[in-house]
Image (tube, rainbow, N blue to C red):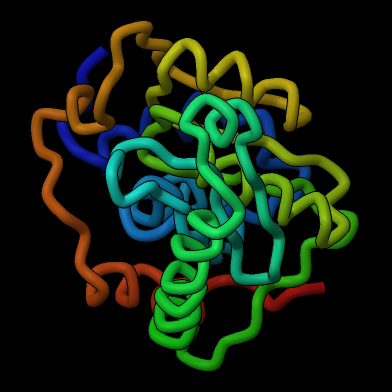
Length: 217
């Protein structure tokens, strides 16, 4: 399955999630690429949209490989298998995590514009990204939602590698994935248009949230 762009992927994903509309879900998009997809889902479900700011912990010598991820609320995930297989030491991990936390703080300050996170306690939470290859960012976002008291956590992605989908399914109440691709090496492989999403575009989509979304209960 190939998607025209993130908006197309979001509309198709929303159709697969239509049954959640009566559960009054909260939709969380991972910046930057997940937010345009999440915006389409939130619009179709009539649900509030928020962002969940995360940062991958990538090894400098293997930047495509994440040893884990951190989330704005302090939730931290480490992939023990990757740490072990790469021989990453605690000192090396700290050297990766310190600048990652600084960048996470910068992104939170920029993207939230002093708007607090939406309350998730007791809610059905739909975590959305534009695709998953390794799953570290999606996993920490779902763990964060659970830590914040979500009653049900649904991970929704247009495409995922087969291995990541299998691993992530164990961490959520439901995984909605339109395409499981065993050979997926980069999310952009599943899109005809896969431009970088700017800060301004994310802020525009989140700004529409503040103008039109219902107030939290």
